[in-house]
Length: 369
Image 1: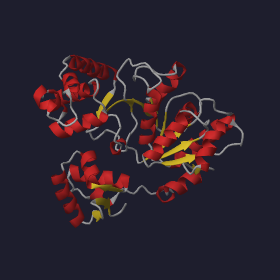
Image 2: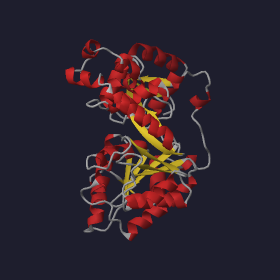
Image 3: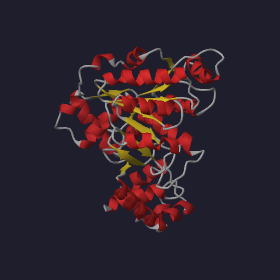
Image 4: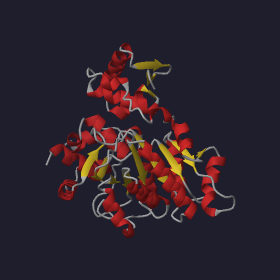
């Protein structure tokens, strides 16, 4: 068992230490191991760390729990993805409140070239199911697309099953431990998804689904996607929460319009009315919004990926800039975990090579964003 992996898991399990604080601690100390091996005095000198948090970080029982999690993961074929690792979903790396640790099981490429999240009401109508099935079927024209949803009743499970039918990789984001499929009636579908997709969660083994976990789960669904499609939704509910989160993450949102007066269409109609979602009338709506038509038949890699002289840190910076379009240097430093001094030098080098462009206000973008 790799020691650093164990410390990463232990840090993610530490009581009172959330994702933002975890990133702060690692940025300050250099690694998860360095954080957890720090003395109480050193921890108390870190901005934002009080006595209670310091005591939590020094609680050795957390290491025992981490060892158990790592053992269970190895025995059940679950991959533990920490946010500093290359296999961690790059789309989530751009989000401040993304989980620092993900439990992943299956064979899906979480960094697929394209990703579409499909969500909606648990009380799906025949029309909603039909639209969902057609949407997923139409996505087959993109060989590198990932279909993401939340394994729930209604639109979610329809999207997953349609993806399996069309041999399209699909990821189910769970509000429980990866060993507890909820609802239980979807266990068979979840098993099939391991062969053509993946199951994903931020929660440790044996965690039972609980009300607060579902909106938290929704932020992962929104964060994993390039575009979110809401098929049917009431005025209140998980699908609307996911749409709000997607908007806050600067993700594109589409909503399927429905009949006036139908409760299951009110949410979608209001999203469109309030300019919180573009109207979805077919796959051409999504293609136009995302400008995917030109890449349907030609798989073009960004020019910078062909430049073998780029360092890993330079590639990381360009990936972040391409996804966010433009970023201030301090945020880029925080998300890349590269110190400001080193990052400034790195950005200057990339700018001289014509790969990065400086903008007013110490903001940066790639030259082909």
